[in-house]
Length: 548
Image (cartoon, rainbow, N blue to C red; front, side, top):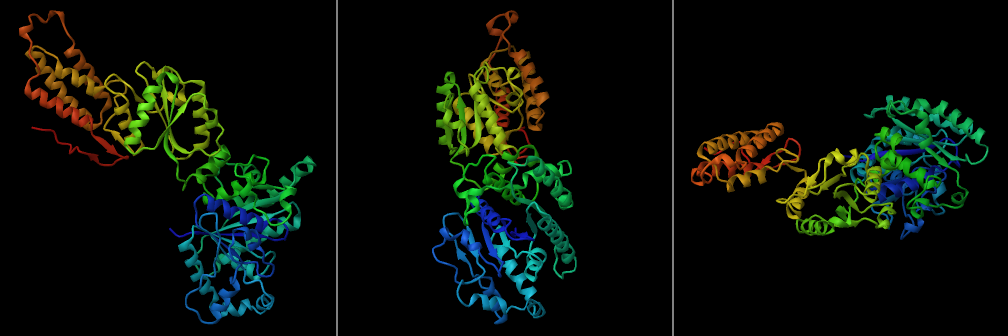
């Protein structure tokens, strides 16, 4: 899948456009994406200044060299990339080499003549090359109305981020350019859909003059609300989204070219990195799932933060001290199966204080009731993982009644320790569930394998064995069809049939299981041990045909 081109534009200077782009690039790269930044602000370049601590050498070429390559008749664009270090796959195409010849080279550019010679098609080659190698290409556009602004806002991007401050020149100019860009795309010979535009109110100080700040929020929303129409979930108010897309003014970060997201790894809501994370997450979500952002901002950000993340553990097993021995053995067998498991014992407060959790799933061993510690663990886990493929899997002890558990646990599909189903068997069940493999049916509290096992060890009168044989045959069919209700009914009938009776008479009137019935029971157990891969997948080991 090709990457996405996102242009950062502002009508006026001094709004923090390059600052926002550079920090967004760092976040996207940190989250595992391949990111390329391109400095198209040729008249006032400076994007590279934010990345100097990450450069081993200064840029030796850039965008102006792409133009020279075109004029020289180069068939395929040269990369002109400056590699950045320390942040995954993050690269830069600077405006050009910062030497005494740079200004003259920029002044000699005739954009109209370039397009007459086919520079637009050459840019299409550049775009295709960039999006083939990178997940996100972030363009830093020139301010105001300019030829470069048209290239960056209309020709190249898939998405447009417009930044403005709380004054009418900045606000109206940004909105006007966004509207012009969509109109210009309609006239282009290239296949481009309508632009999705992200309006970002920048350098906004609401700490003092609260009433005036709220008035300007209203003014900005009124001017920009039309930009939300083609991407914001219809159930989400534009006012709420506008607040999420507001970058606060923090004087500390107004000095020099700085990257606060590198030092504010776990920002609180009043820090600028918190807002920058939100903007970057909207881009990483491709302007989608805004209903989740409205409901739970932290989960929205966490979803993209963990999308390409490698977890240190597959599952954390949380247990009270009463089941510590079983939980420890469970972890041992999970590790043997290749599942990286770790223990969480009630009272380990350091686990709750971690902003980034190292495990993907949470296994909750419940002995009678969910402890207050476990309730806190589950609440924090669910808050962080809304919208992600990360699960809470309860494992109940034999005495635990699921109906007595709180809904956020009792309503989940659970596993259970039973006399015939200890840590080894639960580890296997958990392994299969984590790998998208489930039994053909879930019979809940009824352990069909255990019932069938008791059947093979009992002695009955011949007439009862005939009934048992019929019940086992019907059970094979019900299990194979995934009919849980029928399987439970048949299991209850089977338990009733093999129940010891005082009226059975002499011992010699009773016999052990007949060979044909034993064969049928063994086959029923084999069917019960079949696992299904995924939803609608294949039934490994089961052809759907029963033995003659």
